Amino acid sequence: MIHFLVMGSLLGLSAGIAPGPLLTLVVSETLTHDIRSGIRVALAPVFTDLPIVLTSLFILSKLSDFHAVLGGISLAGGGVIFYMGVQGIRNSGVVLDMGQTAPRSLAKGILVNFLSPHPYLFWISVGAPAMTRAMAINTGAALLFVTSFYLLLVGSKVGLAVLVGRSKLFLKGRFYVYTMKSLGIALCILALLLFREGLGLLGFF
Image (cartoon, rainbow, N blue to C red; front, top):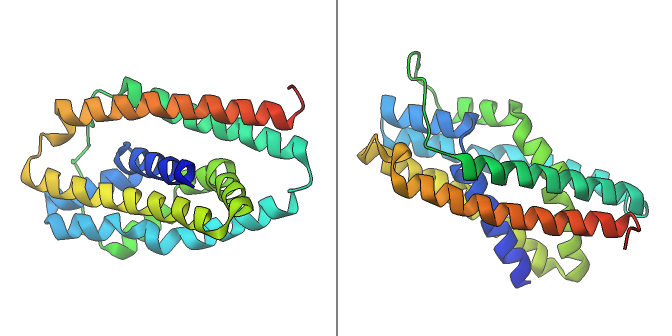
């Protein structure tokens, strides 16, 4: 169970502070309006991700007897995580185009997250397989994974909104850059474990 707690926390924190459409909206709302506006946008995944999670779990449950397909999904998940890791290692700060910003709300944050491919890609290739493995142990392990993931995903974006609201240079600062690089290394290690699991399901060892 500790494995799924650590995995959920690592993935949630990495996804929460990595550059992307939702983080851009969180920061732009914070700078344009106030910290509370950024926090409202950061809450968007809480409202958008449930149908994505349930659909991914349903699809995966139908494939539970096809080890070759699951092996391919695990390899794809490893590729997604490895890409996230490399992006983190290469991170040198976030540059935001603030040329055009209009008042936005939680509803627009939900729209941005729902139309982004990232949640779908993550849950189909990484999140749902991890949840399935956790549920094979017990329900508590699955709850630990998904709870830690969303606490860190949303919590980190809320934290960034607060920090950016107080210092506009935070996303170019050393602490943020070094944190991203450290998480990137950890994600690359996790990707290797997923590659190993995928190759095992495909019968390579």
